[in-house]
Image 1 (cartoon, rainbow, N blue to C red):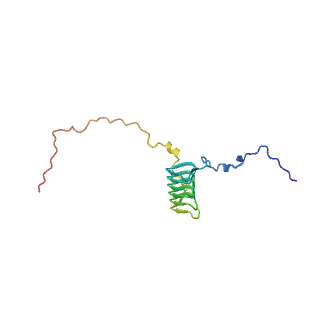
Image 2 (image 1 turned 30 degrees about the horizontal axis):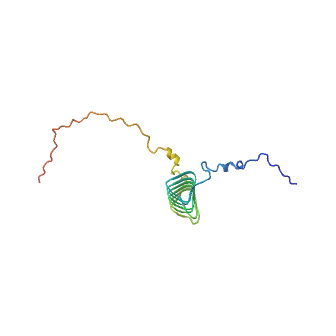
Image 3 (image 1 turned 180 degrees about the vertical axis):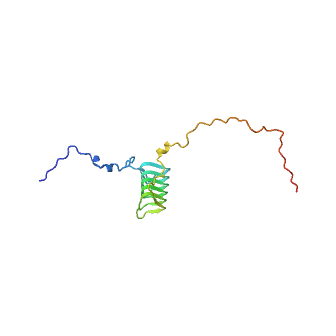
Amino acid sequence: MFVKSKEPENPVPPQAQQPQAVQAKRPAGRNGVPSIISADLIVRGTLFSAGDVQVDGKVDGDIRAGGLVIGEKAIIVGDVYAEEAVIRGRVEGGISARKVQLCATCHVEGNILHEALSVEIGAYFEGNCRHSENPLANAPENVAATERRPTSPAPQAAPPPPRPQASALPPPSSAATPAKPAAVSG
């Protein structure tokens, strides 16, 4: 009664079976493996990454990343710019991101500029939050673009030296003596 059907001779690989929408969902330049700042690491300076960054240590400076996860024990003293930011630790500075998630363990002291914001019960947030259609409009550029841009204007040719001109004033005379002040009588 039941008939076993034949399997196709050329099976389709699993990657090709995914719909195009799912494949196109991952942004270009983000490979899914985050760069990690471990718990025993302290970084001083600005971090730039087109991909994902996970911070479990301390960063004294600004962070610009595609995706950012701040761990429970992490401390960030500076501004955060990301497409998506998940905050579980401490941030002392502003956050500008399209999606911001404040988890129950977070402690944020600063303003948040966001397109979408979620706050779990227990999250500590002191500051102002404001919705923006483009929260990353004022974010710093990535480091590659910064290195290409010259820091000072291109050198220009030196101006020609000034030409000597005839003076309209007569030459100084040695016979001239300065005037003496008048005596004041009182």
